[in-house]
View 1 (spheres, rainbow, N blue to C red):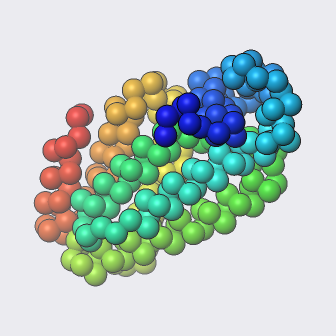
View 2: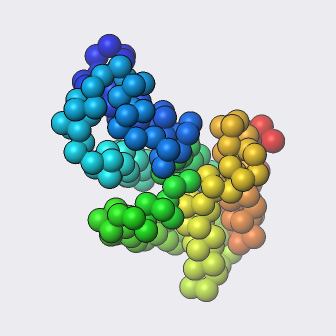
Length: 211
């Protein structure tokens, strides 16, 4: 949708996310947002009475986009599992300010924290089910609970914190470099328990990464 066709509410969300990503959620208030939009602060608070309301709406949009990725029908395989995470990382990069400010948001907003924990549990189960199905399809050498839990914990931790880590490492300014770096690491993690069939798909996927 072109910017000229965006509703006032959508324009507020779009500009807020742009400013949050550039300066940080903590440093952009209604005054700064209103100035960037060339509108009165009351126009913003009409749609979002508090800053938490705006942040929660942006977080909802992130979660909705992720849900669409998980719901997409795809052929079973490690290649497609990695490709799914490429889509997830691209989505997370778009909403990167949420991840950088996550510890503060969880501490300051109890409703945000509650919803976040619920979403994390749902996402964790979805990834675990994907891993089990990959074993059943012959892409992993093992499906021991301990092994899958180790891989699962590594994946979910990376999904939550790769934005912050790549910011510290100075990678975040180049989206493709940052994303490909962590996809490479994810592929290496899966390679540990991959069968020969799975390793072939990992090699195919890695050939596409510009690293």
